[in-house]
Amino acid sequence: QIQLVQSGPELKKPGETVKISCKASGYTFTDYSMHWVKQAPGKGLKWMGWINTETGEPTYADDFKGRFAFSLETSASTAYLQINNLKNEDTATYFCASGNAYWGQGTLVTVSA
Amino acid sequence: DIQMTQTTSSLSASLGDRVTISCSASQGITNYLNWYQQKPDGTIKLLIYYTSSLHSGVPSRFSGSGSGTDYSLTISNLEPEDIATYYCQQYSKLPYTFGGGTKLEIK
Image (tube, rainbow over all chains, first blue to last red):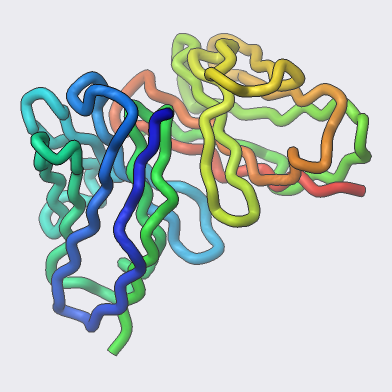
């Protein structure tokens, strides 16, 4: 069965960097794009962008241009989200979603001094 | 950006009820509309894609309809496991935007 398993929760300080992983199984990794979604505490879902798993080309929503980076390790069927220069407002649960159809369990990132 | 509006933020219904959740787009999205379910533990699942197509493994009591700018998700015969928050998402134009969510509770 198709599964996306994300890395565990992270506690970081402002200005630090975090890299979240999303490992896919149960299908051919390059068959579907990988999307990333942010959910701030108690809030709704916000689409961050997606990465073409065949070409590695990322597309970012405007609010996620600059400090955010999507990447792939295709040989390991794994997608990554890196957030640089963390800010308090980056505190959220981040989800990966394969073709928007299958979702990871979410990774909580807490940014606090 | 296309704005997606779910005017009902919370809804209370009884087991066995038929429930309809609405979603409106700020411009036409030509049926490129998904519905998701987020359970209280945070797990998210795709229910409906392209307005009315049922995703694999989703019970047939879920159905979707709509066109143009107005869309809806219907749950017939509400069951306890349907307690969740439901989100619509348009994928007609980038960025793919979500509605604010409708939280469904049992009366």
